[in-house]
Length: 307
Image: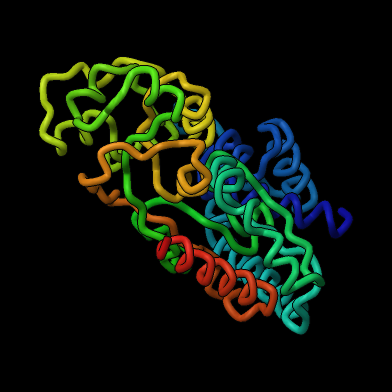
């Protein structure tokens, strides 16, 4: 077996053993289950011994053999040392590619309008954006640094708070002129509501129901209206005059500042329990181009929070 194939087979074996499933390992490695199975079988053929008990438990769950269980800790330690060694090779310079993981909406509404200033400071660093909708494995997908929205705890990652966030209703100047004023929660509750479903699986993500109740309005059918699973598209729908959106301040601040959106009921303030965090693997924390980008993010986050 050639060395690159062997490394891929070892990665497939380790992920399959950890998940006890070829399908789950395939999702992590971004390949097909058939490819993972073939890699594991090629490793078994090379070793001359099976690595999993197949079908013995009456389920589809993969159970590593005793030999496999004994080898897994060393294999995992070996991967960690390889990754650390590669990072040390890159530590000497701020030049090269920096892979940054962010959501599509955060990229469109906050990061990309500001990225030119980073490139002016660090022209030797090429920024590559990974805008996967789901959180990615930083090691498997080669991510250097990212921005995540949540409570600040992600296994295996250092998290530094970037920005807190307010939640408030917004609409277009045209809608306000035609149907306003919307100076109260009751007036807002009578309009078409635009819902942001991008974080609907997180019970702490503020909803229209939570905002209206916090503003003192109960009994309104807050679930009705337009539902969109992208925060940038939610704001665009409001800009286009389709209704009133419950906006996230970090996403909406540039549109509000430019007059494309009007913030409603500014006297009532609601802070989200979730926030934005800069995240990266702790062993990569001293990589010069990562440090430069992290510090640039934090500086721009402070500027955004101050406006």
